[in-house]
Length: 411
Image (cartoon, rainbow, N blue to C red; front, side, top):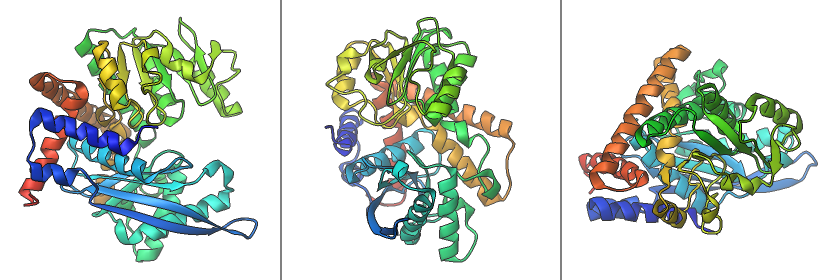
């Protein structure tokens, strides 16, 4: 299995070869500034104590406080968390918001926990991290299998420990305690703006066919947004099945079926295929919106799309991207494509600091401007260095981080 942190370092080395950054800067960027490992003993409902392991990787804070999500997943590893924190560093720099990169995770299958066990684990993790996080230090957010409710528990636990209100310590919170409008669909909305710009730049049309791997929060919202904009969503997949119809799927009907049954399987909409078939449909745009390493050496030759838009974090391995690029496939990288989520998280922080909530349309407009500006800047770097979009995004991001490090005297 591909090591995600090795992939992250390979990508950094590749951009170093293109741009030629200061060696002192690059040496620092090859590892996190700090990694925290915590042991979380939780009393389960049956009275037994089970110990869970959690991590927080704080990668770089030259441009601002560490920023990144917390995931609860049985597959969490230290290398995964380190890689994700590196990608968060570049992501925040690509969209030019004043934040660094961090990421956290707990090795757990949350589906096996009762509500009470889940709350106790969430609070224990927040309590263990309290000395290392804060509105001006490190700002967590939701990620895989975490949500606003869990962020609310974590905020409450943090404030109990420090003894004062600090809504800006965590983003992705419920609206009632300082959350931001648009946050629920921010990743999808940001990705949509990037897709619109990519379609224009690559000479496609708004009737382009689309396949989306992953039908969670990001994938489901994006499918609806794209369909409403005129794109033809022909294939959707979750962990159990792929659903395909060449004339287009009824996304709303599939969403309703998923909510009732927990799966896209057996919906009666389109035709069911194995889950992995989503990569092999002949479409204009393929959107991996699930977990990392979804497209790798073992399946990269199955891909028949013209464009891949990475809404998941790290879904295309470096080797697979080299092959796909050689076949004329354009890969729009995660550090640009899914940056809508962290952008609106930043907007949430600003609102918390101001103690003032913005209207939904204000946030939508600010997000569009941010994503459009970021796409144009990445495309310019791509053209300047005659490279891929990923390397264009990395060149832009690392330049910005490196400049902040230089201005702080860190090299």
